Image (cartoon, rainbow, N blue to C red):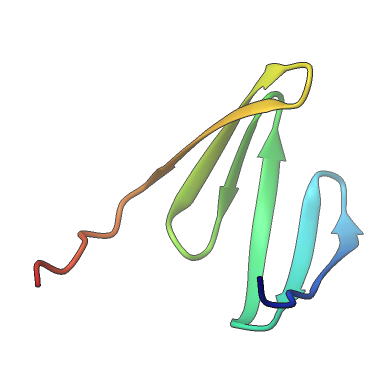
Amino acid sequence: MGFSYRKRIKIGDGTFLNISKTGISVSQKLGKVTINSRGTATISIGNGITYKTSKKKKKKK
């Protein structure tokens, strides 16, 4: 298992700057939904359970 790094900095009301090993992104939290600048939406269902969806198309091998 590899190492990972992620830092989340609050820059406004419900707006965050996310810094990770793969780069920097901005996310906006709207209730139980979080949308980031990389095209990913995360829905918080409760008790630590989340559902993630992405607008990006996966490459076929």
